[in-house]
Length: 161
Ligand code: FES
Image (cartoon, rainbow, N blue to C red; front, side, top):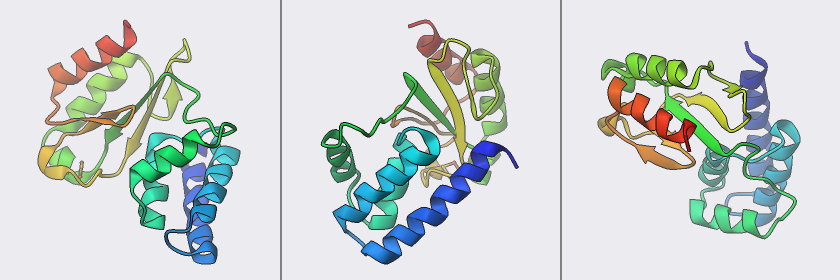
């Protein structure tokens, strides 16, 4: 198991523990989760924010606003967070080709950062938007119904900014 995957599991467990002890909807618990997340990853990515929102059953917008009021919390250490769906339903719709095109265009593997430090590539097992797949998320924004050509184009645009 890769180190990144291990960290994700540790964070998941800690998040469950925090929800248990603080209770659903508790903002102090959310703040503690940010701190925990940043200790593990050095930042609180969009995907982590979504996880926190889901577990504490709060709107993602509330989570985003709370982060803004905590200047010590960083949302990212990179300019672009690219998250590709690796779920089975997207795979049935051709995401394997999409994943390959993304990796080839960025010239990195999953859980890696480009050499210039600007782009991080990760996967998530299903965004629960399977009917619109294959899905890619860039800085929290979804790109649906991706194919090889569209995903290459999208990655090139990010790379060449
Ligand atoms: S499998 Fe990709 S969004 Fe569900």
